[in-house]
Image 1 (cartoon, rainbow, N blue to C red):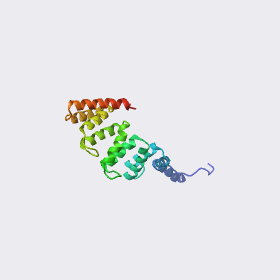
Image 2 (cartoon, helix red, strand yellow):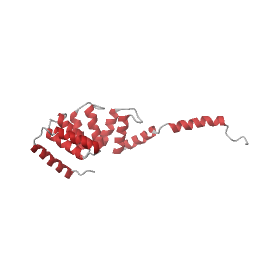
Image 3 (cartoon, rainbow, N blue to C red):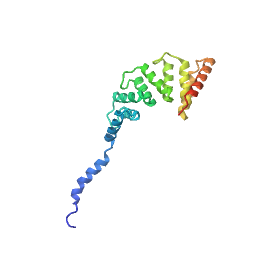
Length: 190
């Protein structure tokens, strides 16, 4: 060799730097890109950024920041962000616990077919949290949630719906079944 090849001792620090760079996750760059898209008004990016803050993935966990981004996406009509806001208000994560706005956000998501929001709205009516207790409306929302579910979720939701329907008269159940069919006719599943 003519002395132009690098010596092995010089390559070791370079190899360590390269290995360290490859071992570091790309989260900070991904978060910066996601934040720019979210700041630009992209509802999907806002929703995803809210999820990142809620889970602490790539950023410190911060429910207040999560709620901020979910609200921006929810205000643009994103049903999953609306559902997440309902959860945040139900459990007081990033906002004071308050069942009234929780129900409002669940309703917006439920109207768009989010079965978990429909279920939680049923629970709200069953327990009188954020709305007056109403077993008929609880049955209605449980019915919608069950009809949009599959597998174990379906079985669990049907069981919940039927258990809570025991206090309804046959006429009330029939009325809710008619309400459910009418709702499903005007809100086709995606």
